[in-house]
Amino acid sequence: MALIDCLLALAAWPSDRFAQRARQLARLSLLDWMACGLAGAGEPLAVKLRELVEDEGGRPAASVIGGGRAPARAAALVNGATSHALDFDDTHFAHVGHLSVGVYPSALAAGEATGASADAVIDAFLVGAEAAIRVGCTLGAAHYNLGFHQTATAGALSRSSAQWENRSTQASRRRTAWNARCSARSA
Image (tube, rainbow, N blue to C red; front, side, top):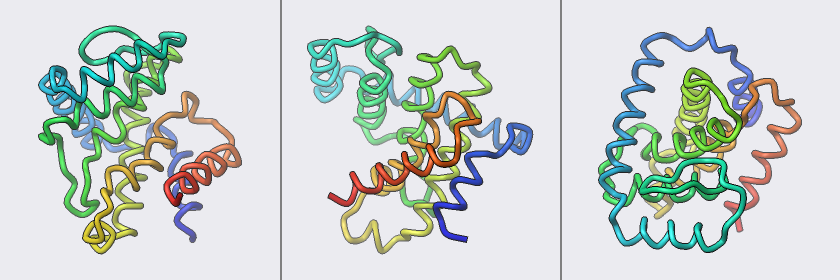
């Protein structure tokens, strides 16, 4: 099975397929991500990104770490960079990257923008994290050793997985989103 077909199948997993232990770890990862975000909120990068997002405007749909609201995409950008600013966030060593910083900002912003439940956000994180792990393990340490940051490369696909406000999104739309992400990363 091609990796993209595996990821499409993963994105369609029913919620009851996730083990309770995975849900507990996802909640712990959320706590870790939030602590890292709060710690990084005063970093120059975080301040500048919040100012940029505020200047750009748009329909506020999601919360921004450090205060304010922004369009979901902009909130995910600020929150991801802010939570990674001090580089204290969780690491998955087989994936060679940071899962929470790559997935939770998108899952939370999309969830907040659409009124999703906390359980739906956890499900989105689990799908996104699993996608990142599978892509990261496929790319392997050689990818990282060439200077690529798995959090960004494998994370791009994980963010597409986590952003669907509705787990019933058609497979063709998922494939299109992943193809667009891969194309953007290859430029």
